[in-house]
Length: 381
Ligand SMILES: *[C@@H]1O[C@H](CO)[C@@H](O)[C@H](O)[C@H]1NC(C)=O
Ligand SMILES: *[C@@H]1O[C@H](CO)[C@@H](O)[C@H](O)[C@H]1NC(C)=O
Image (cartoon, rainbow, N blue to C red; front, side, top):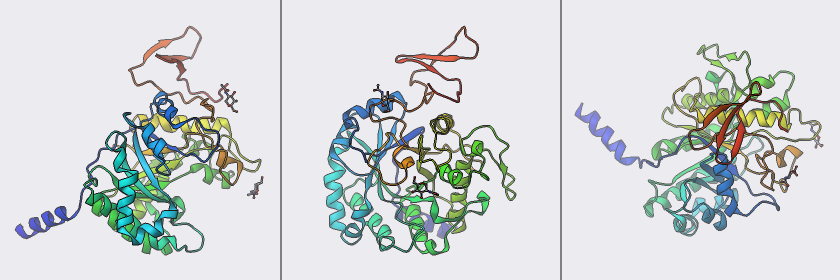
């Protein structure tokens, strides 16, 4: 017995726990691949009007980090893929980067995590970056430890869902065999430092690539029959939760049980090319409105119903300088001029005063900046 306890104690002391608190609710990715966005100083107010209190950015732009100083908004700061090689082999550089890009903004800007690399493990041919990813995460973490910041700032990386070989049914989720050699030690790292596993998951792409077989309602969190996992008998009424549980299964299949999965990106485009089925204002509004409502109620997935999911919607703005299909430039909740692309039916911070308007179905909520129609609607004017 005593031997077991001392082993446990030893293990606990070894792992440098991350004890920062993530708040619940909805986060958003603040991408800035555009030439027409409002100045960063205006962004905190846009977020407050949506009751969004968590933001993920893709770099460490000083103006952006400064813009969130003194707000309650938590920030995940990105370290781009172009840094991975240098950071992987040079701990001093990693520490200097933290001293220059993170430390000066703490604690006024609530930086909770550094996201090292975005979608590094891809589905195409093996990249040199694969080898640099975990070493770069480790040097960044070591830098935080040296600076005494590792208890408030975590280190993670955001993966593409393409690292899964199978996601259906959710209980059978597994990572691609050729990725396991990279993912396994990353999972060991997460376990040791208690940082979350981030995955970018887009039911939109599943629908767009196979609209005849994927039910739109299932992808959009709209009422539908759902899908039962034959192994667990759990019923899924939406694709995102099935994707999340598939990731949990894949992690468990490698023997890890103590790692939290968070959605670093999800969203739906409001416009696309003609052949991009489903990319409409109506669908994008339904997806993000339904998702935000579920998150604000603290809903969990079928395997973890009482554990609220942390998600970051992609993205805050339409970004006109992104390459690729038209949809890539149209994932925003906002147009660059600060107008919402569709109604998000967001409730205010203050407890809303519900009024029933004389006209039929409309339940309206009054708060300081006006009326928001909470009736689920199919089309926004
Ligand atoms: C859809 O159209 C775009 C051009 O508008 C083209 O680049 C792309 O390859 C097409 N995709 C498919 C699946 O046909
Ligand atoms: C903002 O931009 C959108 C899209 O270009 C446009 O439809 C809308 O009228 C603009 N709103 C304002 C207030 O200028």
